[in-house]
Image (cartoon, rainbow, N blue to C red):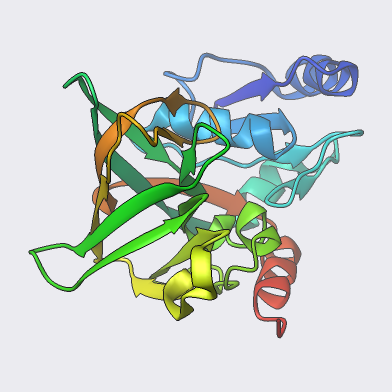
Amino acid sequence: MKIAFVASPRPAAQRALEKLSGRYGQCTVAEADCVIPLGGDGTVLKVLHSLLGATTKPVFPMRTQGSTGFVCNPLRMPGLVDRLAKAVRLDVPVLQADVEQVGGQRKTLFAINEIVLFRQRLQQGRFKLTAGGGGAEATIAGDGLALVTPIGSTGYNLSLGGPRLPVGAKFLALTGIAIANGLPWCRAILSDQFILEVDIVEAEHHPVRIETVLETIPDVRHARLFCNGNLKSTLLLDRDVLTELAEISSQPQ
């Protein structure tokens, strides 16, 4: 099996890279049968983003000392090939945002865990929400909102008071951020087929940015948010790690 190890710049990850590549070999990501990020969740997300649009390659992340790795396997040197063969595949949905800025520029963002719209100034943003296809509408005021996948629902979303989603579920969470009047929708669970159109009311005077873990676009006028069914990322997880994730995601809130 051809393996591409990708390490964070942290010393512990670099040491692991040296040992693992010396033991199992190293190839380019393009040549690899499997990509192994060494570090924490940030390193995993960067690798998953870099593989979007390319031939799907499974990713077996390993957490190194000093890193936070919610979706990572433990770092162990022996028996790696056997672990890869026995690992459980978890297909991770990919969020997409088609964005129009105030100046008319159009851009597209992708995210593995969440896409967040957030005010740029110390004043509330105003968001007009429309269900895809011109369905129900609502206009809200607040600091922002987040559209979240199951794999991201136990991170920033949970700190906002958003719903925890089971790993592998065909749902998304829509969580409001400091929404005025505490509207009940601010903890909504949606089908992963849901399309959300967001218009920023008076965008020139109440500016809003949109961001993912890796990218930020300021001065948003309109955003179309949805789960892109044509893209997917595949994680390989030790069975006990996947079981632990499932238990955490099913805990009562």
